[in-house]
Amino acid sequence: MSSCIILFSGGLDSATTLYLAIQKGYQPYALTLDYGQLHRREIRSARFIAKPLGIAHEILKIQMPWKGSALLDKTQTLPKKRSLRQMSRNIPSTYVPARNTIFLSLGLSWAEARGAESVWIGANALDFSGYPDCRGDYLRAMQKVFRLGTRRGREGRSIRIEAPLIHKTKAQIIRLATKLGVPLDKTWSCYKGGKQPCGVCDSCLLREKGMKEAGL
Amino acid sequence: MSSCIILFSGGLDSATTLYLAIQKGYQPYALTLDYGQLHRREIRSARFIAKPLGIAHEILKIQMPWKGSALLDKTQTLPKKRSLRQMSRNIPSTYVPARNTIFLSLGLSWAEARGAESVWIGANALDFSGYPDCRGDYLRAMQKVFRLGTRRGREGRSIRIEAPLIHKTKAQIIRLATKLGVPLDKTWSCYKGGKQPCGVCDSCLLREKGMKEAGL
Image (cartoon, rainbow over the protein chains, first blue to last red):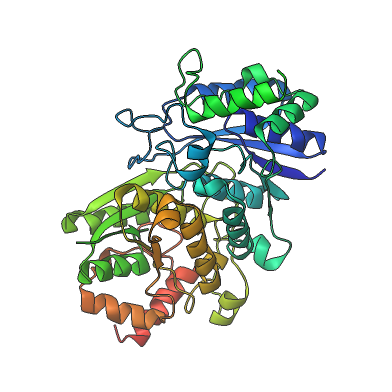
């Protein structure tokens, strides 16, 4: 049985990615980063979703004292009621400098140490907030780093990056999630992270739009 | 005054890189990773060297519970008395999965959050232990990740990777260090990390060879 690392934030996309890897027969190792995000609710969601699956799940603390993101710094404003056009054109204040590069690097490290075949990421470049590190060209560059920067990549078969949602709309992801039995109600998308989703941040708007289009 | 991040382990190469950046007029931010390395002595060295310079210095704790290296796992054997030829051909047990990728990612994050111009790494591909993530082709792949994976790289001028020692021999690095006033006696190279360097690991052998060739 091949194993893989799943970068698992506790949101809709990463939960769907996790369930997809399981459905495809992989033994998943789920990796969650606690990087000081203000919406700590997503870490709780990650724990809730992973636990009943009985899979290996690491929640790693990473210090990012330099902040540089509205997700790390209360004094910065969250994006509100942006149109899809605005989302696709402007990187919002919720962008966390190099987050996916850090996340993928740690996933790569775990994959190499444990002999896992691939690292799975729920990145999505269609209905998304315009983040630079969710796009296909970025992931291809990172794939080269996986090959050249590791023992495995130099001596044998490189650890692969799998981004199965990259070309899917949010509605398609939600339909897939429903088919796979992902507990949608347990996933957390909102950038705010109170008791109820705020309903106006990019993440809430994309989720809502996807739910509507998927007929849920 | 331009600022830059220095990946600063506390060893000879990274200390020389730090002093070089200062000499070139940069305001340096030094970044040290505490990733559970058994030779914790190098973290103390990093602190000793950075303190009198009065520079910003972050020592970040990173958990790598998966280990996968003799530097993280006491049960693995350190390489002993390898020839230069062996070093250039075989990646040793001291290789830490994806360490430089993790290190560079965190440096990139800090650089972007603080508006620094570049990230400096003391990687050296001549007198080295054969690590995949110290080579030029790897650093070029990582440079592309710096460009595509950040707001800065997409919207403006990319954060650069500077590896000024990459083509230098250990003797050349030591001569440069001496010229720059690096406190060589405070740097720590040995993979073991007791009170005295072991004298037989790759790192000790390379340092000794360099010292001899530099006439010290």
